[in-house]
Length: 514
Image (tube, rainbow, N blue to C red; front, side, top):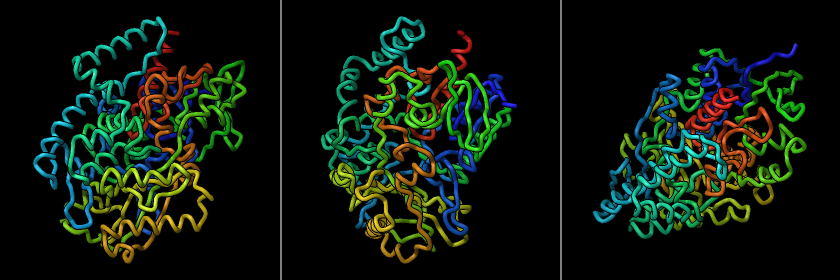
């Protein structure tokens, strides 16, 4: 006999778990189906070598929304909190940035940074207020949409006339010009430019990178952390929160298709032949895979499926994991510095040059890095004396010319190690095991189209009112009973829970008004 639920969530990533927990809190009977053998999606902690574990894709926590945690009564234990960002220099003259405090730059840049941060925070607060709101539909007379659009207009006006005009001027610009205008330090400009392009198919000179910088600032509030037990501990906490409210979670359950009958979603079928029914199907899977693979284009209007197929989601960030016999030597470092976030981005031009080959399907010969040593603050990641290096490495395009063959993977690994060795001399001699996850691997392992962490670029034409596309920006798809709750919906990526939270509230509002 087919089981029926009030709601079925496809994918037990953090947004899917948040959405399920919110619906269960409201009294709904919810089923979550996860293809992998553990919950968490790309926010998981896994072994990659004997006794060595790592946060597989997402490795730093900087976006989990306080309101989500409060409503679900979730608390996350942190191994390292309020991490500084250290832009590495080969000569040991590093730049250290924590909040508004910066070391390693001249007095002019310290003053300029304080002014720059104040200005950007004013703009970021405007975006922050939108994170936990459903975007209003444009061109309607619906009361809720009109009120939401009026609220956004008031938020803009609160900036004041000068700041409002400045925000509208810069939001679509590139970060490179802003940084060149404000600062002298190449390392500081490199660090800030990397923050604007991390996880994207963009370079510092690309339009919209001021927006991506502001979005990151809006999500983080300036705080970056490593959870105790890695990112998998965050997902496990959310899963416990959901199951404690009655949510049923089935892992190793691959959803093969969303069942459509008489023009509406009515259930799902799994790879082992099981069927589960519900009039509310919520996908934590990216929009392209949800619509084109799980639903099928024949069930939706042609123009809509074409727009979904054209979502830009070209993954460009690889993940590198090293099992180390010891912490590497870094000139100018003391023991506490290994607890921080490290960046290899010597200047903004270096970051742009690193991006250039990706435009033509080639990996960067001099990539940029975001690095952490989770074992330096949490001994559970490695055996005694050993350590783990976890790094985001850009740029490594999903669709590499010639494909990610064994030879191409080995060459990129050596490129990455050679770059690290410039800042960590001799590190190659302490490597006990290595794991490289290219965007193609991320797509294969975690089911993300294009291997793009954020389920699509965060640019003005894929943001708020038009995320993932126009006519589907409020979580409900143009197929009755089908909703999105993942990073492909507003407000986008990061381990924030915002999209799942917003989707649950949108579903409950629709049920109430029905």
